[in-house]
Image (cartoon, rainbow, N blue to C red; front, side, top):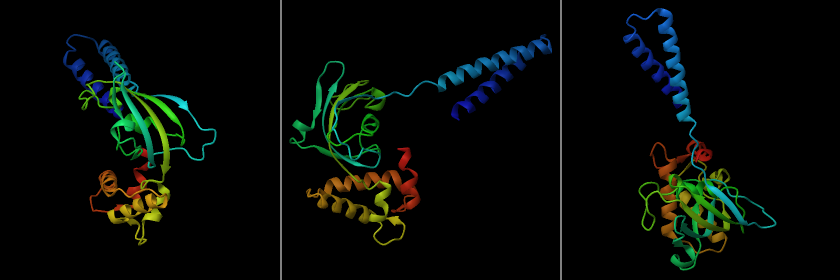
Length: 240
């Protein structure tokens, strides 16, 4: 663990400092002082490591009676959303207004959106509506973005309209691997996306698919050889 290495470094530093300043102290006194310093270093280092990670507060506003499938990392989600600043309630974004009234697609869990969405929209049902409160560390942080000031806590009202198998789901690998060579090319991933959209009667958005494909390869093509191997595809999946 990272904090374990820090403890060792703290102990080493304190031991050296104790030896250098031992002067006329007895061996027992030096040993006692060293152990006190070790204990203090352990407490300080461990305490820093136990600082909790910021959390997304989730409030379920509406939920369907039946839920055939819940969202998970790798799924493609279709959502409507309104975003507000917690400080003053100003709405900074709305799919109902800024996207010609159309919901938007994105892939969950690959950092295509802010971390607060990737965390706050897990295990969600089609027809469910959530209010999620996202701290700055899981949104736009100290820099802010556009209409969002630095260090802003954000509130989103999000309605889930649809879930699709994304190109990052385990079940999709064999469907995409058209030539059975156990690796995926950009053309294979792009073809899968088009087929999924057409199967459900949705218009094919070439530019959106290109963005998705680029994002997928940027995250998963670890050796940058232009292909996603079966190992690369599945290894990163549950860690996102």
